[in-house]
Image (cartoon, rainbow, N blue to C red; front, side, top):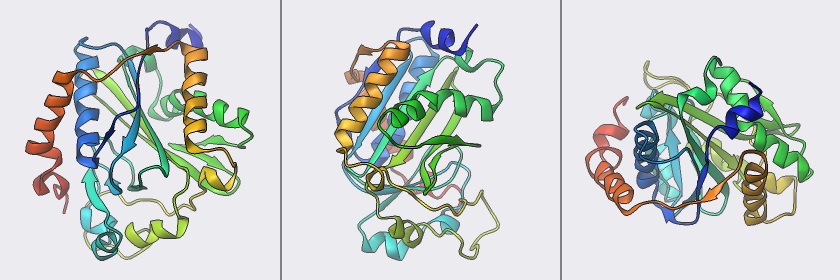
Length: 259
């Protein structure tokens, strides 16, 4: 079976448009992963919209090692923890492009994690190149260009499904990243995986296209290659996510699970 045939086995659904706060975004990822794994919704591509800036840290990172709380507070940036591994990232409304893929495990069956990262983001690299951005996949989980890192992916395989999500910088101030994320500084704890020091290269430095145009092109590219039907979040999915914010993702206990 070719890689294209793997995608074509499924009827993909698109969720895009509605904005949520950072903790709600974390909760929606878990809810939709569970529902795809349980067969309660089809394999899904979701593009996120943020209502507030955030530092999003990986599941296995130490909070103190990753975040400069004084700087985050100065910029009005909240801190949330996701369910996937990987490093910390800075997100801001209208300044990043974030998407998640929720898929059956069979989509990446027989692939290593590194192979699956390249496979699941290949359509994005192709779409960016079609817009004149000289992008490529950089092992193990980055989309890069000659100027540096455009975006990074993270992944989890649980609840009977694969969750793969990627955030790409569109108009983030590169100098702000090391101010709020403690990249390259001394460790304050012996716990957790550290974020790698990489130069951020926002798409806005490489194209004059508006963020919305780039995102629409990404959606169109996915649809042309793999098929895509319009979808929406169900009311019960939103309610389930809100409950997870209350009990998990919006709590200090979860955010500081690795202090």
